[in-house]
Length: 61
Image (tube, rainbow, N blue to C red):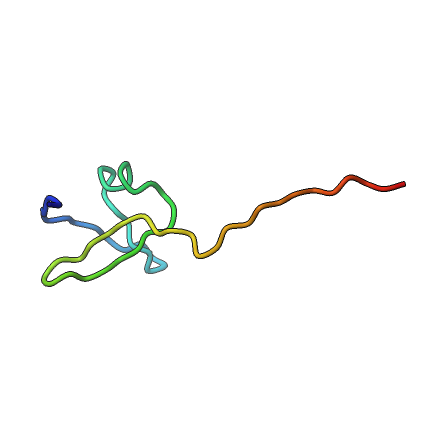
């Protein structure tokens, strides 16, 4: 089961949520997913909505 502990964050001038360094170390600096489970807010790394594979074609002469 996931450990539950209080977490203090703050908002910057633009309204962005600033997470404490220990959470940034776990989640990284990318997009996070926020869900509510009962009386808890759960933060997790967001999975990409789509993936792209780039296959460059050789120039034809």
